[in-house]
Image 1 (cartoon, rainbow, N blue to C red):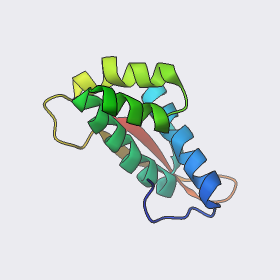
Image 2 (cartoon, one colour; image 1 turned 135 degrees about the vertical axis):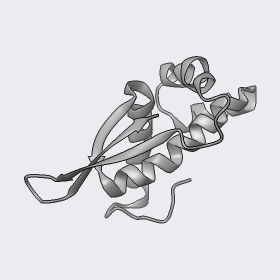
Image 3 (cartoon, rainbow, N blue to C red; image 1 turned 135 degrees about the horizontal axis):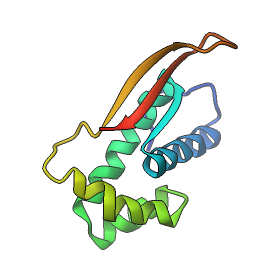
Length: 113
């Protein structure tokens, strides 16, 4: 389900990392990560919120198969998705922070709008 960036990981590790990042974003509302990871996470988070807006049994099961925590799925359908009912995309934003001190990687904040 992920995009084209490989992020220097094997496929299984990359998919697990993105699933964790999307779950953390939906659980906390904002996360701090690198710019490339934020852009990939943004794609999947927007797809999850779009599933939440449809709110059928099928979309609940699709979201539950992607997200690890059932309480995050519940929060997605009961709290997050209804906030974006009248919005056609653009549920998240990436704010660039600057280079990380240790290795110089560009950091960003990914947050729900």
